[in-house]
Length: 146
Image (cartoon, rainbow, N blue to C red; front, top):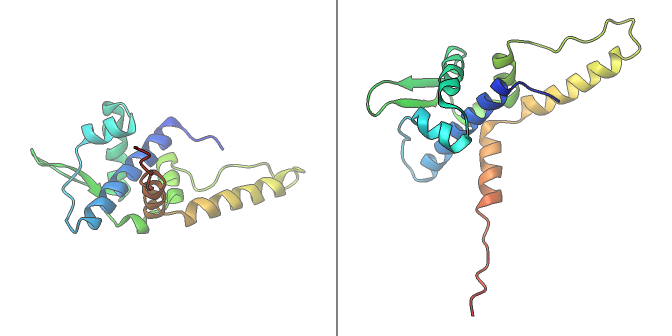
């Protein structure tokens, strides 16, 4: 599956905000807004491009912004209420990929592939992704000092 760079960066930005949200929750604190520069640095996204992406994500109701010296971005909804599929569709501005007409011999298989991919994307929340990522990279590593 190919997605645009814009979509990839949008997913990374929402993922970053979701991960920060979960870290704040675990610490029992409300997370302050996250600065664009911090997201750009962690996710390796050009900052100017990220500004445009976050503006689009805000228009689509995925993020909120705060102005001022302590401003930045945060999720508009909890990360367990945002799926990868809905972000992708909003950024790509499509409901479904266009596929061959019904008289095409491959039409049925492409529809099944679309449905399978959409099913996975629509059932995967950013909270799940962030938790899985944290678990994967914070596992205990034994210290073999003698």
